[in-house]
Length: 86
Image 1: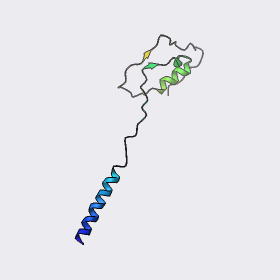
Image 2: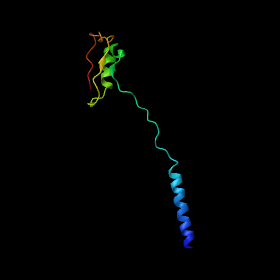
Image 3: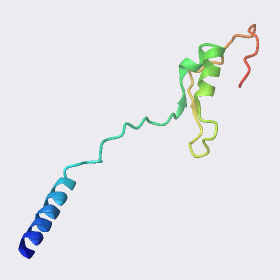
Image 4: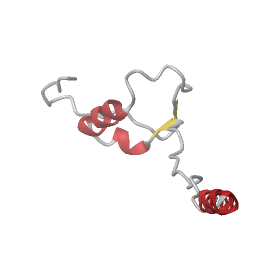
C-alpha cells in the first residue's frame, strides 16, 4: 500500500512537470517604432496638424525631440476659426 501511494505521487509529479513545459508565454509582441519625425501629411491642413499634435503622448518625457523635414510646410489656412485643444 505504501509503494502504491509513492508510485502514484511520483507519476502525478511527472505528469504535472511534463504538462507544465507545454505552455509557452513567449509570444511575440508587435512593437510600433517610435515617431522620430513630423510626417509631411501633418502639413497638409490645419486640421491634419492639430490631429497629429493631439495623437502625441502628452506625458511622454522620455522620447527624443521630433525632427522636421525640409519638405514640411506650415498649413496656410488662416481663414478658419481656431480649433480648441481639449
